Amino acid sequence: MTSKSRVRKIAKLLKKAYGTPKPRRTPPVDELVRTILSQNTSDRNSVPAFWALKDRFGSWERVLKAPKASIAATIKHAGLANIKSARIIGVLRAIKEREGRISLRRLKDMSVDEGLSYLKSLKGVGPKTAACVLLFSFGKPVMPVDTHIFRVAKRLGLIAADIDIEEAHKILTFMIPKDLIYELHLCIISHGRETCRATGPKCGSCVLYGMCGFKMKSIYRKKELCR
Image 1 (spheres, rainbow, N blue to C red):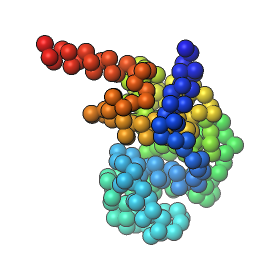
Image 2: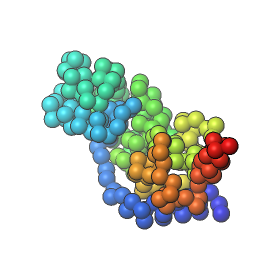
Image 3: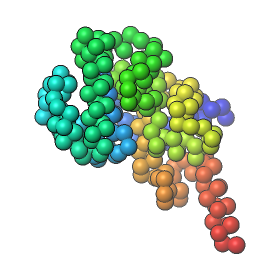
Image 4: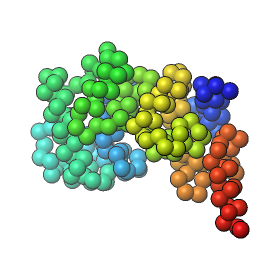
């Protein structure tokens, strides 16, 4: 079985288990700020912080003009509020200086590589944040790799154990068929949260059990502990 056909089988099984994700398109600056807020925390914390920011200030222009302390107080539930408020102000200022306004619409006409380079040149924007903007705002075929996807991909053997997360973005974007990237990204996140957890994975109820190498390592580890 080739890598791409294996990925298609994985996608089929995950969609059967978790359903086909609904398509969405988020305004690109919204997606950029939302993903910055999600860094080093969960959606449970970052999503309310994002909407609190939108509700309080109403526009990114007003956020840019606001005192850093006010922004930090508004997003405190996302954690690292002082760091994230500085990042948000920095990227909004940089975008306005480059574009003449706070807009990322120009990314629509860029290639994936051009878009990634543009976004990663903004201070505080890494490969995952850049990929999220391109995927969720423009539907471009690039795979964002968060901790769930990184863990599940390694356990399934899609990427080698010694691959770092930045290299994983390139490998998985190349490996996964373009028409599956959006759905598989969201399905793997659901699988990582609900079943293939970092600790206490539910291997016995996993729809990918027959395709996973992690289960064998777990079995051998248990045997060694029992000796």
